[in-house]
Amino acid sequence: MSSDQGEQDAQANGPSGHGSWGDLLGREHRRVAVVLAGGVGLYATNVFLTTSLLPAAVQDIGGGQFYAWVTTVFLLASVISSTLVSTVLPRLGARNSYFLALGSFAAGTVVCALAPTMETMLAGRFVQGLGGGLLAGLGYALIRSLLPDRLWSLGTALVSGMWGVGTFLGPAVGGAFAQFDLWRGALVTLLAATLLVTAVVPLAVPATKAGDVPPVASPLTVILLVGAVLLVSIGNVVGSTALLAALLVAAVAALTAALAHDRHRGGRILPRSAFSLSSPLPWCYAAVALLSMASQIEAFIPLFGQRLAGLAPLLAGFVGAAIALGWTLGEIPSASVARLRSKSRVASAGPLLITAGFVVTGLLATQDMGAPVVAAWVVGLLLGGAGIGIAWPHVATRIMGGVRSEDEGDTAAAAINTVQLVSNAIGSAIAGVLVHLGGPASAGEARLSLCGIGLAGLLGAWCVWRGTAAWRRPGATDGTQDQAAAHGTPPQQTDGLPVADAER
Image 1 (spheres, helix red, strand yellow):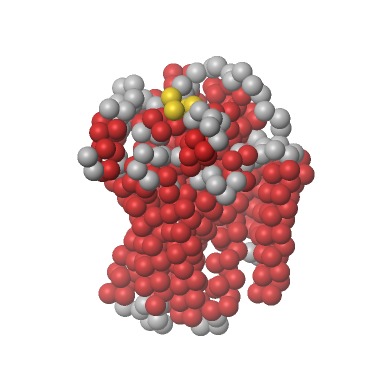
Image 2: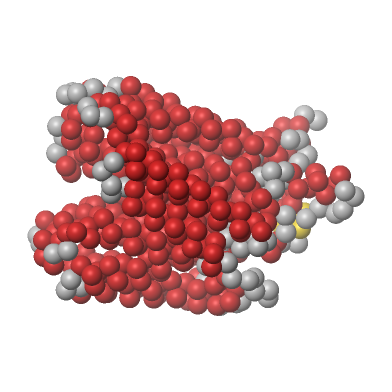
């Protein structure tokens, strides 16, 4: 029997088979899908909605000097709360954790909607960010416990696909309300959506608590992480390229120190397995970081579209959204891939599409671009975004199933969101550096930033290849199982099943 045929038989006779979109969105799991996707959708929509509302809000309540901090405060609060997911979850249980997250998000939204001054809005954004970071983290952490393992990749695709939905829905809703000077009404709409998701939580999420409660993450680790994000955020608003580069180096140093301290403390933010190169986790987390960084070039596309092609702001915004749309469209078919080794090959090919799409788009950048070149840009950006989406569900699923012990599972899944948030900030700064270095001509800015970010896909492909190596080995699905066999110990268990079976 060939290895491929053996793999197919193992999957056909496995304990849980392979799920489908109909299964995920069917009667048994659709309420869970609504809560998991809805929480992340609220977070993503809020990010883009607030950006589109800010000009109208500043005109109404003033505080233009705090413009950049409206986003920065939200991001910092999100990073803080995302590190607490694996601690809050076992203490409060899944249902109460969601109530806490949604309650904080709703309270912050109310403060922002009623804010008479920009200072008050900043306070509301911080509270909103605390809830948002929990929501985004719970969306990944609870996939493992609320869905069967056969639906992990589809659940991950649905959750992360909400970023694409938010990219379109946020600017559309925010722009419509701002157009009629009703920016507060957009926040009221966001609050109504939050209450709808909250109403579904008791019907979908159990109230049970975990037996073992892990220690709280070290305050020093959290401070270093937040410091890294703060340094990057400050760098994004300074005018000097040299200062921005220096702040980025300092941020990387703070991030390195945070990881070293977390490892010394035994893994509170990242699971212990993430610090062993023989585990798939460090490679998969690195892949998540690189994929997240690549997506941040999206923020500059509307600017390039206006300067190089003379596009109207709304149309330029939708050109930039092509990356998020490609991400969502790439995930839908990719998450349905069933064969283990096919998952590895498909996931590894995804980052190469990032390189191809972004590099070609960058090389096409010229002053006074016509409609054909703009159309080619849209195709290239869709291709690059699809590369992110194709790889994402398989990398995330590998993280969820690649832990060495079951008690690391929630920490591993929740850390996906923390890595993504921190990497978004760093990726935005790197893109900013490349834009500045490519100047002063706008074509040079676009060319260097797109090509430079696109080349990160090559490193991403290698990380995915390393992280999913076990899926390409006949008879093995997890490197830790090979280690256990070498030491004469039984394989690790996942939900009562050997890892080899559980991942099938």
